[in-house]
Amino acid sequence: MKTPENERNLVSDRLSQQEDSELVRIACMQLPYVTTAYEVLFHRYHNKLIQICYRYLNSTEEAEEAVNDTMLNVFNNLKSFEQRASFKTWIFRIAYNQALTRLRKKKLDQVDLDETHEEVSQETSDDSTDRSNQLNSLLAQLSLEERSIVVFRIAGDLEFNDIALIVEQKLSTVKMRYKRALEKMAGSASTED
Image 1 (cartoon, rainbow, N blue to C red):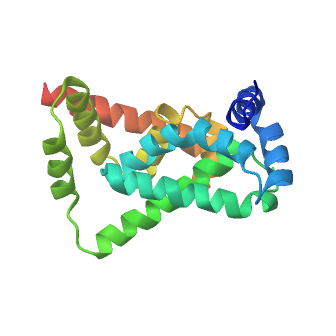
Image 2 (cartoon, rainbow, N blue to C red):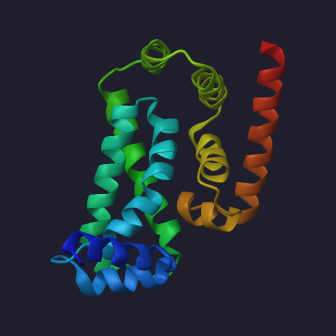
């Protein structure tokens, strides 16, 4: 017997096989009353966006709020998405702006990033957290532009041309800053050992 829940799961499973561009097209037709395609997009990008926002904000709670704001922005503006860039680039750009806005607000509120780092360190102490804290410490030594490029390349798994669109810089500049950032991180990591 087919229940509405089973049918919904079948539709979601079929939609999850679609490319982003097709999901965006379907979501634009469905929203705001039916959210099935939007939910597939949400689940496809949610964890990756949390990782990226966390690298800026050093707080799981702040990262989740930034991602929720990002997804709300996508929900409200999906129909105006012009597809000049890929959906992935567009959603990462929105998350990037949300994270930067929150980061600026934190700085205005005089919150010291070192205090936030200590707070995160005290929350958990397993092996993956130690590696994450080490990565956060290396990222903290980079400029905001360098950190953005490294985070989008490694955590976001984006191509350099997509990163250039997100951070609004030339492709050659993005590549050079990425190379220099990795060199800076490698130098810092070797002095810590």
